Length: 240
Image 1 (tube, rainbow, N blue to C red):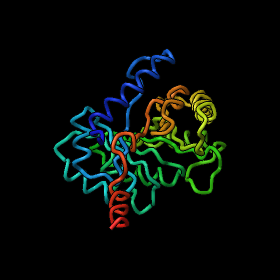
Image 2: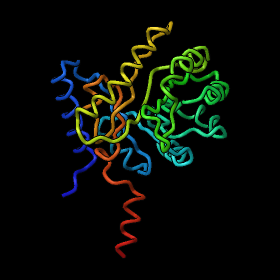
Image 3: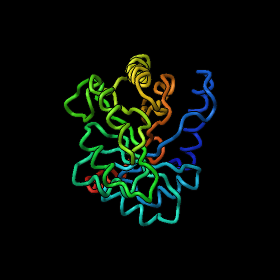
């Protein structure tokens, strides 16, 4: 029998709390960011009813449709996709968080587009830890300069760093990758007037290793929602 979203969330919370306990961390110190891209509004509503309030979207137009459908709920919307310059205005006006800043000019556009009536936009710098061509993100050597520049923008609030390390099956190798991001985080914080407080790292397959290394936000999609709706449709069409 297929598990429900509520059952998946209950199991996930138990796994996270157990990991926190084993690593002598305060219970509840790790926030769950439900990655709802390519899942419909009903799935998000089910996750909301199960206690989640932070949702991550990769695609702007898809996200805007869901925001309209769920406008009555005080959801915290996180943008976690690659940022195109022509989308910065809409992102700045509709999201509470952006995890994927890797260039200062994008940060500037977000800052200039953030309405004065809204709180400062929470942002994270995305780093490309392994210099992978397939992934966006700033090189670690650029991170300190970028952090200092973003810290000067009045309508952005620099919260931390984000990364998607190269896939590893071994949990010790996963921990080593995440630990590198933690070390960059600590080094940069020593140079900032207002220290960052967020490490956005860890997904469905490696969140336990990420928590061990200090993650404060784990971005979980499959472990909550299961297979994405688009993938399901493609599978069904193929079987027909």
